[in-house]
Each structure stands twice: as structure tokens, then as C-alpha cells.
Length: 296
Ligand code: GDP
Image 1 (tube, rainbow, N blue to C red):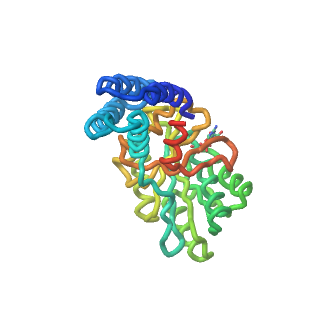
Image 2: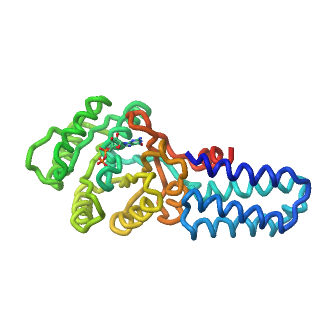
Image 3: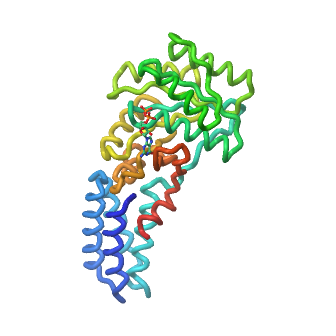
């Protein structure tokens, strides 16, 4: 994750820190290199541009260049800007309601939505001690409901019994009732995906959201698709009130462009990162830690 960006920035900062004094020109040269590094990591152009402009202004505007360790100060400014760009105020799930709290999972087919539903359920159960139920509303993809049931068995989380032929909104109603009656803390609704964002998908999501009134609506997107992931997020965000994004396949994403641009472009926080196929391969996304990892 972020390997080449990390290397590139490391080189720029070593050169900055290596000098005793810095001129405005030194900062501008370094920031040009930072901009190239961000673009090579597939960060959206306006995001990279704004990042570099903000950092440059802060670095040459105050007394940074006259300080004893100007290089270090500039690196600190970059670090703070990176944390901000990644979503400084990002939080994990906000499920502080009278139970059951509803978490609705949305996304395109193949994004890793069903796997992620099970990963989050596992985490809520094991780490937070919540009593969790999952229900699949995906009546389009053959065996989607069975897939979630199998995952439920693997992570030892209950799933709503399948009634063949039942439609998504009715499944949502039944799931809500079951979760209430059986005293579950959290109900996770895995909605149907599509190959592309289309109106039928959006209408179905809105109908389910109207019934379920979820505390969290999490969009699952594949980080390997880079800026497409950000565009998909923007499309979904225009239609349903997303509370956050989960980026999957971060384990294979050496560049990290989707992670770096997501918050700035869509305004939505990244809440989790999927880091592998196994059901424990899920990390809470902490901007400060991620920035620390990038800057080494
Ligand atoms: P859905 O169609 O969106 O529900 O996608 P699935 O949950 O069925 O996942 C599709 C494939 O992606 C499966 O083979 C998953 O194991 C895999 N997958 C999901 N998340 C990750 C991840 O974070 N890393 C990796 N390497 N594979 C993942």
C-alpha cells in the first residue's frame, strides 16, 4: 500500500531535511516533486493541486523558513495536510441508538460487498461484543443469499432465513422485525449490486433505506479501480445519504489513489479498508496512522 508514493516522498523529504537553511525556491521545487508523486499515485488532479498549494502557502507564509529546522517543519506541514486530506475527523461506525442499529451495505457487483458485510459483522461481534444479524437483499445474483449464509456460518454470525422469491423491501421488513424480536444489537443489510450504477439499483436502495432507516449506509468500492472508485462513490453519494466508504483490495493497491482522493472529492470518510480475502482482513481506517505509514 502506498509503496511508491512513500518512496518518492521519502526522497523529497530527505533532501529537504538534509539542508540547514531553506529558500522559498527549495520549497517550491520540493512541492513540484510532491505533486508529481501524488499524480503518479493516481490522486485526482484537483486534489493534488490543492494539496500542494495549501502546503506551499503554509510553508512559505509563516516563519517556517526562518526556524531552526525548516525541513522538519515542512514535513510536519505535509503530514498534517495528508491527515486532513485522508479525513482527519473520520470515525468508525456510529451505532449508538436503541437497538437494533441498522447498517446498510451498498456497492457494485464484485466490489467485495458481501465479503465486507461478513468482515464487519465479525468485527462487531468479536471486538465490540455486539449481537449481530445479517440479511441479504440480493435477489438478482444467483446464490447471493446463500453466499452470505455460508459466510455467516464461517464468522458465527446469524443470518436471516432465506424465503425464496421474496423481494428486497419485504426481506428488509422481515429482517427488521426478526432483529427486534430476537434482541439483536445490529442488523446488517447486504443489498444487491449491479455491474454499473443504474436507476433500478438506486430506486431499490432508496426503497430499502426508507423502510430500514439505517444509521450507517456504507459504500463498498474496489480500490484497484482507482479514480473510477471515486467516481462511483460520487454517483452513489448523489442518490443516497452515504455515511462512509469501505475500500476493498487495499492489499493489492500499491498506488493508493482512491484512498487519497476519496474524502476530498466525495466528502465521505473512509471507514474501513479491506486488506485480503480472509474474513479477518479488515482494518479501521485511521487517517493519522495511514499518513504516518506513507511518510514513514
Ligand atoms: P460482491 O459481488 O461485491 O458481493 O463481492 P464479493 O464479496 O463476492 O467479493 C468478490 C471477490 O473479492 C471475492 O473473491 C472476495 O474474496 C474478494 N475480496 C473482497 N474483499 C477483498 C479484499 O479486501 N482483498 C482481496 N484481495 N480480495 C477481496
